[in-house]
Length: 343
Image 1 (cartoon, rainbow, N blue to C red):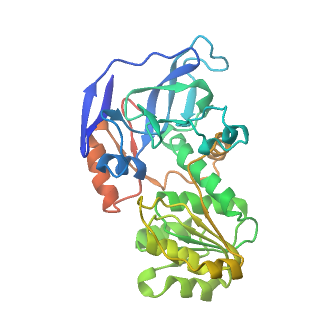
Image 2: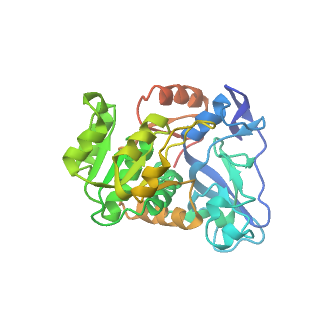
Image 3: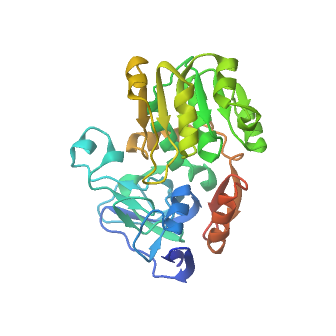
């Protein structure tokens, strides 16, 4: 089979490799589609250290081709989405359902303490408990179950519910998935601040009540003028200035949530008296849980999330480095790798 192997920082090669065989509790998938994520970009550039060589790619869906001897409920030919976070199911976090915080998790092609080969390949090996049936959902849609599961977990962490006002800072692929997740929860009004005019337009089409161009003035002041008190400020960019905006726009008694991935070692100043006096929460959100992955697949199968608008490019294994360049330049939205013959 063909794989796109990361062999060094900034160096990816398409190679031939032997097709994997499943362990007794595993299945092998023929990859139908795999999303390209900012995490992949960090690993490609070395800002997230990995051992070389490694096959990246953790947002995927495909067809079951082989099953292990102990697998039940799945058959060759089943169409499934893959959850790349493999928990130990034994630590206290797993027992509480917080599988995203597992002490001994394995990541399939994604970020983690232990990383195994992922889905920038024609075939991938996955524990049977980490896949969900997708029926006739297109693979390019089902591949977004993982990032959508992250957004559902983030929405849970935000505490935003019906009629809660939200300021969303950033409208890239994750921001637009986050916007739709919040709309499904009944949050309203939702303001979106985004530099790119095309992304602002998409945010409006996907249900943002107001969209703000931060180049036109202080977005915090504009959002407050438009929707009043903001119950939840959510940052989906990963930069200190935009995290500060999400914090500054959050009203007394509200919650600021960091969804974007900041660089390791970044710092910012926050007045602890303000947190105390204004009864504020500042929260992070990491990855997804087994439960939010299942919910994501359900939402996609029910057509509650617009994926076609977000997936702007389908590429081959050879095109991944170029896709990284386009991501850095904010060209297009979600890039999806189709390693073989797709559907």
